[in-house]
Amino acid sequence: MTTWFISDLHLSAQRPAVTQAFLHWLKLSVHADDTLYILGDFLDVWVGDDVLDDASQAPLFAPIVQGLRALTAQGVSIFLMHGNRDFLIGEGFAHACGVQLLEDPTLINVAGKRVLLTHGDALCTDDVEYQAFRRQVRQPAWQHTFLSQSLAARMAFAAKARDQSRANKATQSAQIMDVHADAVAALMRQHAYPDVLLHGHTHRPAEHLGQVDGHPYQRVVLGDWHATAVVGKVEQDTLSLQTLSLTPRD
Ligand code: MN
Picture 1 (spheres, rainbow, N blue to C red):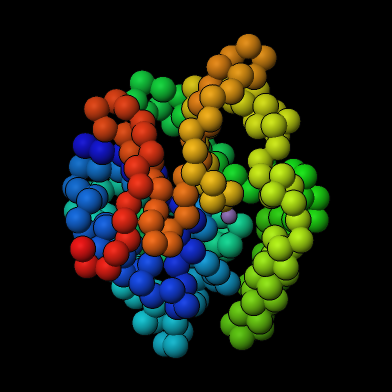
Picture 2: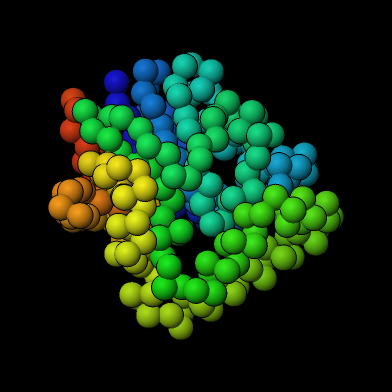
């Protein structure tokens, strides 16, 4: 009975090897009594659940949906939290995969600890421009208007947003792109000082020790998926990071 935490796979048609490696890992490592938490940016881009009905997108998404469905049908609990790339994943996609959407943040009990799960983008408060974008696109009215556009128009918007985000990343300092200590402290206070804060987004896997108002906590950061992936694993009541080698068909 293992609890897994993964994030930032950024699955896309551009990197089919990562999708293959993920599906291979799912089959090999995640067993029927396990729980899997996917903490955002599972997909590199998602412009609406009707993408599943688009024949041109099927080669990428059909195997992903089938892979998740195969596990959830066996009784694996899979929870999916939105990231900054795939925040438009809706009940249609979740239902097709048999996964349960998870609010950001969500507090769970695991390994005898209170663990607060979040994607992590909301903590990067130094990136003022991004936080303004985030507030806009998380509004139900914005999403409703966006989802009423044609698939082609939505995909064009997503490509533009991705280019902007890349350009932004190239010019912003490393500090601006990381979580802000004040934002972490505020979140820990709001949730009555959990033992662990677990997130992804920054692609800087690490285990940090910190303190807020005299309450010690651990901040566990998951890694992204390229040649290797850094995932969280709870086994025998111990939470640790594990580096996976993603060589295809090992
Ligand atoms: Mn992210």
